Length: 450
Image (cartoon, rainbow, N blue to C red; front, side):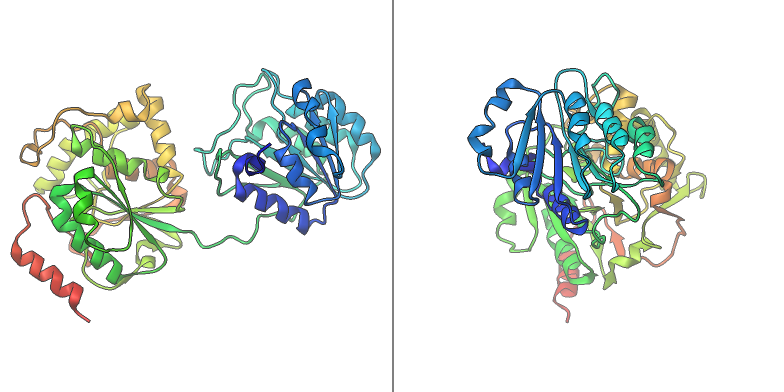
């Protein structure tokens, strides 16, 4: 038995369970699904009275090897049948139920909850259900193939209402590690997680060798001018490592092999940014985006929501940039998201989105195209900037993210109509054509200025 595997190697889950036990003065934990006993053993260090139910005869036979002398009782059998008998003991103190039973195609979850409801415990229990769908973090794993239906709130809502006389309170895990599974915590009101910490933010760049002359200044100007709490992540191609290693600019650097179509690869990397940072918010910035003046992160939020700027495609009929932008980006975005690109959302950095938006958008692309996200946006046609206007586009990261946020998550974002000519602290350059020695001197002077 490996103690590191307790709670599926999820320290966040273990910490939250421990907090609940302490906050509600829990003396008894009842667990369904002992498995190898790592989590059961952890419970014995939290409460004096632990009960666990295991259906597998092989697993149950292993119990004496680790349970002797501990305050735990392990029962062999189907939790749907064992739990009603166990609850006849009428536990006087509040009980925490940790429901994590898995066996074959049938899930005992609803039967377990019905047994808790019928027991009419003296004090409303705390219920923790593992492998549960988390709508706030849909990328977390959850059980969906059992005969009773997927582990979602609507499945358990009727029986949960029986357990709690008043409306039950619940919340989901906001962080996870190890197996990264979804969890729902249910209890009597008032019932809420530990006071919310301030959201974390990661600034993510995706670059390649030709743009290193730009990003070396973009990183320095960002670090100098952007005030607030954030960390920087840079995804670069392997041939950049030798040069970047000489900079000494604080950031987390990842080196990844590109596709033949480096342009499509850059957009793919932006859309999987949540897979290489744990931050709550992700700010996407390109190598040629320069923050030219001191600015606080709060500038890019409105009432705590990330700003998503937009403007209608017919806003300026004579603007060739708008006309060409629609021609380039509307078809690939509609192909992958299944809805028209109604506005232009690629209106200058930074592009800030909740981390949950990234997997949700990828899920949308997979549903619309019928392909894994990687395959839906993959391109093996070599890219060269001189052929930009004729190069076939398969996706558009910033337009797709803006469109998805506006149409499917509008309550989480501040949608602001773009006003041309307004002052903005970031300036966007054109990395393929603007670079010259004069610019390098200009940027260096800003970096060096007191």
